[in-house]
Length: 130
Image (cartoon, rainbow, N blue to C red; front, side):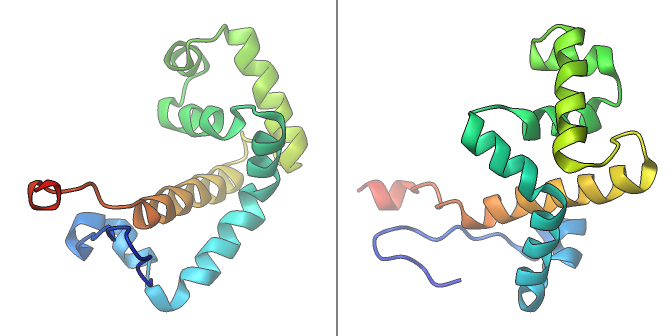
């Protein structure tokens, strides 16, 4: 990507990306972004418009693989988690219990994570501060 003037560019070595390095061929970046938007766009839009946290809820649900542990990690009551899952499924028009959906949604979440990482400004080094 082109660096913005005055903003240090983040540098990620392909070895640091692990499996993500296989996904992120820069020639296909737009396709990956389109995939993530196709699977999660409605949810990210909803979060932005309603200042909700459904994307982080979905991410935590997949990370923990347990309602009880997800609720604890999110510091919410399990009934609140179940309500959020219902909202997520309604917004996406997909079940989060279907394995194919889980695979695609988790992949889309990871695409968003790596995209965010690659577009995050680099933290200043000691040389930058002098």
